[in-house]
Length: 201
Image (cartoon, rainbow, N blue to C red):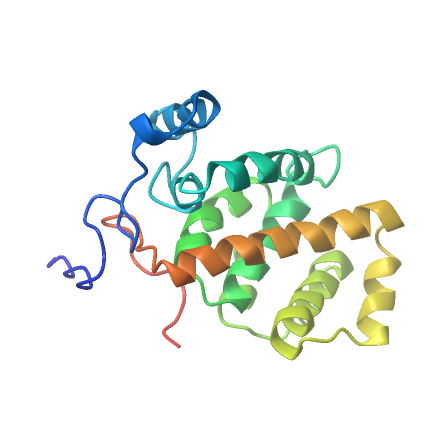
């Protein structure tokens, strides 16, 4: 299978429009973040080739976002399955191949069924799905696609989550929409050998 050449403005090391951050130019705290992402055992698919590496070009931003990221990914705040479902919906509604690839397998590991993944991937109606899944899919499509949420959809979601969880869930999706903005603006390429998981636009 032939390897697609990278676009001309893509750095071959970082696989995006920015070079990899220079460790020697970072402060000690940012160097620790660099080292944790550069470590292949760190658990991140993207490592430095993705949002973590992009944000290290602005260490203060990277540092400032960390507490919110830790809170919103805490399974005691939002359970892991709901979190991964929300991230997958966000990736799909922004047509972000990179974020989809980073979370498709993880969402299945956390219990999101193949049926739900395919409904999200192909933007099919969530007919027959359990209410939490159907309500969240419709919410994400309205939020990111229509740029408004109907009273009916909001009421469905508000019936499923208490206020604090609902606020955290919406901000989790917002945080990943922000991540997607970086991935799109800097044209982060899929990891080598990873096929696109979303249909072409």
